[in-house]
Image (cartoon, rainbow, N blue to C red; front, side):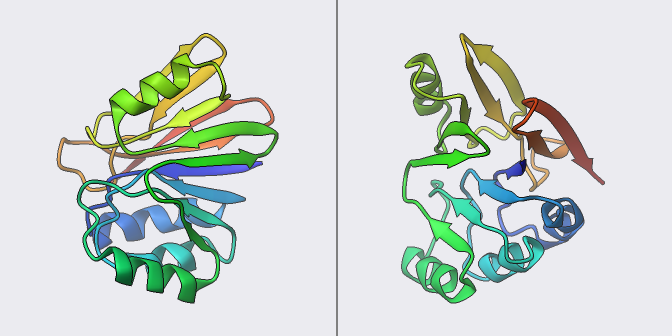
Length: 163
């Protein structure tokens, strides 16, 4: 299974549109928070081409009620709240927005993969048997705009840098 993992879009529709081709190749999509505005939900849903999209809250996600309305309308978007626990491609996955929470979840040893965002810093590291992964940022605030494609069969991470 191919997972596309991204975070911290912050309403940058131009960078997000560059990511759409990669998102469309996914079997499932994970967004680690700070999508921000409700108008981003239909863009993400469309880019995923009907495949499931899992989103957790970030600290800058504004109108949560309207974000939920847009997610429900899309049909393939699931808003998980602060933490998501997923089973995808045979992997037990936890997703949240904050690095300190993610590190604690990864250290617990209960997950194969823990994803997070918030600090806009791409990170890939193993803590025991758990892959701790920050896909970086789509926004471009800190420089490189990145996202990740993860193959759940071989657990290889492919970094994608947007222009």
